[in-house]
Amino acid sequence: MDYIDLHTHSTASDGTFAPAEVFALAAELRLSAVALTDHDTVAGLEEFLAAAKDHPECEAVPGVELACMLYMREIHILGLFINCRSAVLTEFLEKCRIERAKRNRDIFLKLHFLGYDLDLSMPEFGGKELDAIGRPHFARALRAHYDGFTTSQMVFDKLLGHNRPAWVPRKLPSPAEAIAAIHAAGGVAVWAHPVSRDTTERAYLTRACRKLAAQGLDGIEAYYSLFSANETALVTEAAARYGLALSGGSDFHGENSANVVLGFGAGGLRVPEQLLYGLKEKLIQRRTEA
Ligand code: AMP
Ligand code: MN
Ligand code: MN
Ligand code: MN
Image (cartoon, rainbow, N blue to C red; front, side):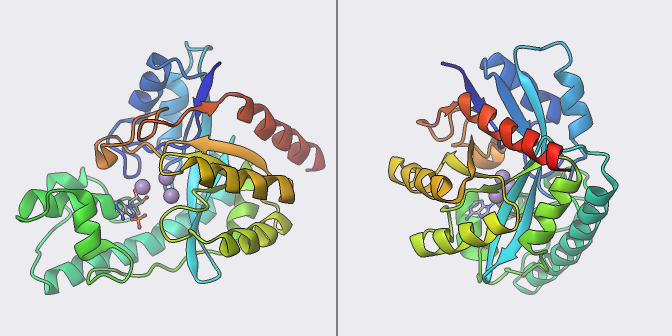
C-alpha cells in the first residue's frame, strides 16, 4: 500500500525544514504525495513545487492552512490543490497576516510586562517579519533565553496557550470566507484536526460539520498525529453523514514538534493514498461547477 501526508509546515511559517527539504524528506520516505500547508502563507510553495519537478513518484500538493472562528472557537481549514497566484486568496492572506502582525506585537508587549524581553532580531525568529512568525517561534526564543522551559509544550502551558498570561486573541475570518478564498483559488477545503486540542466534543463536531458542509467544505481530516483509532472512526462517521471526503496528515513542523515524524505522525499514523482520489473527485466536481 502507498501512503501520503497532506498536512505539513516549513520555514515559510512555523516549521523548521525548508520547503524543498519537506519535499525531499517525503520522497525519501517514499510517500506517494505530500502537501505543504503553511499557516496563512503560500510563500513556500514555489520552492516546494520546484523541488518536486524531477520526482514524478511523489506528488507535491500546494496547500495552505487558514485559521477561522466558528462558534467561539478557533478552527483550522486546509486549502489543498490551490493556485498560489490567485488574487482573491492573496488578498485574503494579506488580511490574515496583518492581524497576525498585530497579535504578535501584543505578545511581545505582554511578555515584556511579564519579565521576558524578546525581540525579533533573536535568531530563534529566523530573520522573519512580524507578520510571518507564530507562537512556536516565541516558544523557541523563550526556551533559548530563559531557564525553566524544557519543552515547547511547557511554554504553551505556562505562557502562550489559550487564556494563559501571554495569550492574545487574533481577529479571525469566518469559515465561509476561508472556504470561499480556497475555492476562488481552485482548491478544496478540508477541516483540519477537527477533534484535537480544544475541539474534542462530539456535539461540536456534528454542529460544525453541518454548518461547514452547507458552506461548501469538501473534506475533513480523519487521520492525524494526535488521533486515536476512536477519533478517526468518529470523524469518518461524520464525513459519511455530511458527504465529506477524508483527508489525513501529520502536521509535521520539524524540530518545532519533535515527536511528529513526516508520514508517521507520533508513530502510528499511516494515511492511505486512496484518500487522495476522494479529494480529487471533489476537486473535479468543484472545477466543473465553477
Ligand atoms: P499561532 O498560529 O501563531 O497562533 O501558533 C499556533 C501554532 O502553535 C500551531 O500551529 C502549533 O504549531 C503550535 N501550538 C499550538 N498549541 C500548542 C501547544 N499547546 N503546544 C505546542 N504547540 C502548540
Ligand atoms: Mn503550527
Ligand atoms: Mn492547525
Ligand atoms: Mn498545521
